[in-house]
Image (cartoon, rainbow, N blue to C red; front, top):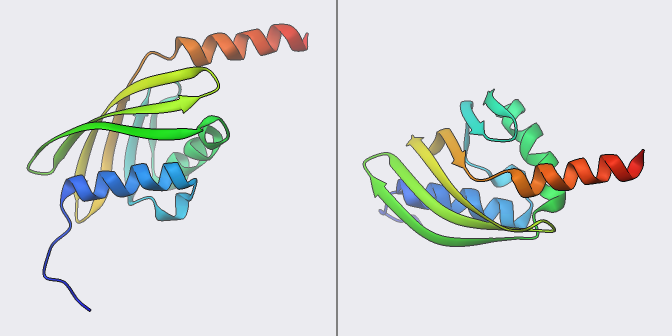
Length: 126
């Protein structure tokens, strides 16, 4: 059954978060030319680079908890939390949506819990 409702930019971001929660990156609504900006890796360009990074994140992502969306036109700013072995990491992410795909995503969060855990594991491995 076909619906007449169109997919909103918030729907696209919800699909992104649900795909992360399900650890099913095939469901990510990413444009081929997506730009992903993250405090851990800087700027990544292209779907393949974004998927490679997100694949590396999945093992530590235990759950996703949506807090709030703010939306205007094709821009969505989402406050969500990543439950990880390093604790709960609050994330504010800015999305630009076109044609029901994410063309740009910029995450803002404090990476220190992750970096400190990585440094600790490197010290322990020495």
